[in-house]
Length: 350
Image (cartoon, rainbow, N blue to C red; front, side, top):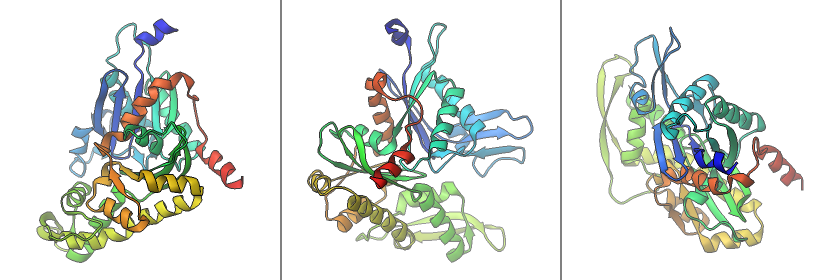
């Protein structure tokens, strides 16, 4: 067994709605690609995966479709997820003749159901994994952010990704209380695109909406106003049109969903024991995930909770690094579904 595992390529996978990051044991992060696949509808052949496929979004001819096979952090198109992971596993492992298939730790949102857990496991196995282990996203994010969660002291992690926001209090290498919201980066992008269409009569794509969010997005008032020119299609004439958006406009669009995230953080703290809440107030709130970098998110959470907030280093990669760190105790992990939904139901009854 030791000889077998010596050649094995164990992988930690952050299977995100927007990006897939893969950590290879002993090598670090080896794959960081958008979770997009471009397929020829006529032949079923995969044309591109990752960044090259993302550049095709909204730009493909009739016979080619560029799509996200994952939605809200879970598998929405099984076949495309399998084929996307196959390509990414090949890049990550560089398998030789005697190299066994990799053992894989995959992160899943804390709101995942048992059926959704199984679909992730089946997709990873069909894509070439030998064995599959699951880890909750906020737990992986906390590990990747460098939190010491081995002791009994509670740490609150808010992981704001593309499809979901996962909030959890971590203690003793596990999740004490958690919640998952489908309000995250993609939802913010949709809100921006909807606002530009309604207010300015201009239709913009998902990629443009995301760049507006990154460049001038804010969820807390700031002193200086920023603006940017955005190109789109006039809703009435169909002709190209340029509009100028300001950061204050975008603040009005994003403030409500951002407050929903803050409210959910408070709800998670209400479910926790007084001891854990006291630990959190001492240790602070750690923010991870790509959308955690949205301007003012830390200030908003600090204002609503009264607790200091810290944005993790390299928040985009925390979950992948955490899944990679968990490879160290892969031999003690439970294989297959971890029944998060069932455990939560039992906890609430208890």
